[in-house]
Amino acid sequence: MENAAAALDLAAVKDHVDRIWNQEIVPQLVEYIAIPNKSPLFDKQWQEHGYMDQAVELIAAWCRDRKIAGLSLEVVRLPNRTPLIFMEIPAFGTAQDGDTVLLYGHLDKQPEMTGWREDLGPWKPVLEGDKLYGRGGADDGYAAFASLTALEAVQKFGGSHKRCVVIIEACEESGSVDLPFYIDHLADRIGEVSLVVCLDSGAGDYERLWSTTSLRGMIAGDLRVDILREGVHSGDASGVVPSSFRIMRALLERIESVASGEMLVDALHVEIPQQRREQAGVVAKVLGDTVYSAYPFVEGSEPMASDLAELVLNRTWRPTLSVTGAGGFPALEDSGNVLRPFSALKLSFRLPPTADCKVCEDAIRRVIETDVPYGAKVTFVAEKGANGWNAPPLAPWLEQATDAASKAFFGQAPAYMGEGGSIPFMGMLGEKFPQAQFMITGVLGPASNAHGPNEFLHIPMGKGLTACVAKVIDDHANR
Image (cartoon, rainbow, N blue to C red; front, side):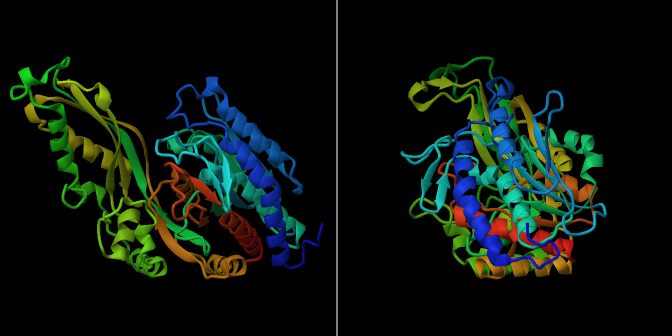
């Protein structure tokens, strides 16, 4: 092992990271993608199926074999909770002073979805050039492998790091509902965290290190409108019995402007900080038209606005509503002349980073359950919800480390951008460790399509990101 007091050899780090990704991480991810370990929200029988345990063991076995001084690993299992991989690595080349780096990722996956390319599939890993297709490789199966590879490189090539804790949960795609119980259970072993490294976020392109400045919160739930006890002949009843779907439309129009997509519930909005507006302007200049062209629009369609900075703010700081599922509707080939008794929709709200999800949920429920047309029975059941997160001011050492890492391993200065998705753990950590700094980043760049069909991991991005983590962790130890 190299002298830990020496400066980190960046060229050696890059070579090591490239080799481990090519020879070990990619083959491991191929096996991981093939496991249909859907998050509990999407697989109620996840324990009986055993896929989550398979994924945990695959990742844990690889991690246990790493040549990292002092590494310990435990698969923690609380009753009736998804398992969690917990790793501890003592300080290396510097004082063991209670200062802790927490590295985070998750291993549960979103469901299959439709629309995959004919030769691809969610549980069918396909390596095509620099891309590894399949569900969960980029979101977020690579995180454990990348975290330990970065620490291994620091120890092997002249670097140092503070005490590190690695947490890999198995419930993130279900809103991290099990994680607070583990955080409480492991509080003494986690320690005082001064730096959080999260590899579950996105990237505006694959040309530089992207640092996430904020994450939106979310609410997902089922809105159901009942008007009849059973279906009736539409020719006989229409004009007398109101359509449950028309009532549903009327309720949704209380929430969202049909013309603009703007949310009409005041409680869902917040004041956007000036710094975040300025950063959105910079991102718009860096990315140009790829702010919207990265998405698979059908020919002739267009985005919701022409101002690129406003589009960035739309997906990072403004509330939105997406309808992601439906119930009470027969398949097209099975639909007859029947006035259906009920309509149900799965609603996915994205909330501004600083909005309170409980306040927003209550406001939504009041709007849609008050003064319902025709006295229909209306229910809104929120399945999951989470607050967003807004990064604290960036410490000078982390800004310098991020800049140096991006230039060293990508040849470009880093960029800073909010993300439209949610990582519930970040909000929890922000409250628990208000003095901590955050390196929130990821490989989910243009067209990587997390949660959708044809999801892929961009392998060169994964390599560069892993090397950047090594550099930042070393700089954290020497700040």
